[in-house]
Length: 189
Image 1: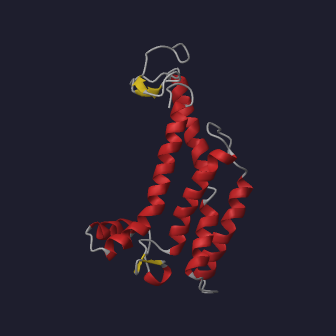
Image 2 (image 1 turned 90 degrees about the horizontal axis):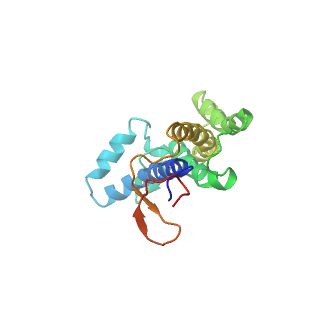
Image 3 (image 1 turned 135 degrees about the horizontal axis):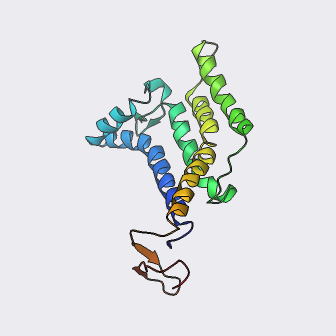
């Protein structure tokens, strides 16, 4: 990774992707840890209890235990990860254009129908239906979140002239080794 224009955007994307992967993996990690009598399982279940009801009948079962979140929440987390993985291939990095609102609204309909149908007791969706509804809604979220964050990063880079004031490391184009960042304008190595 070289410093200069686009460095912050690539770094932002990598952090977002890592966060999405962690968020999608953690609900599966809790039952694995519980199956192996590991203390951190309680901490993970406790952490997710603040954002999810964790009703066992609405959770997937992994390693003989319920995941740390219900199917709908798991679908949301997996959708964010899938959207983050697809984002650079569909939109590229560095763009700040948001998708049309109707895309978000259309992908929100399955989730809204599922939530409202269950709330008004018109039906009781199974775990896989809830997971699919959460996934369909959240897969588009990175396409709104990443352009907004990219706009912020690009403005910050522009404000400081694309420089990396902290120095750091970059990969040299002439060598396959890591070398200390040079304090010269980008491209004048």
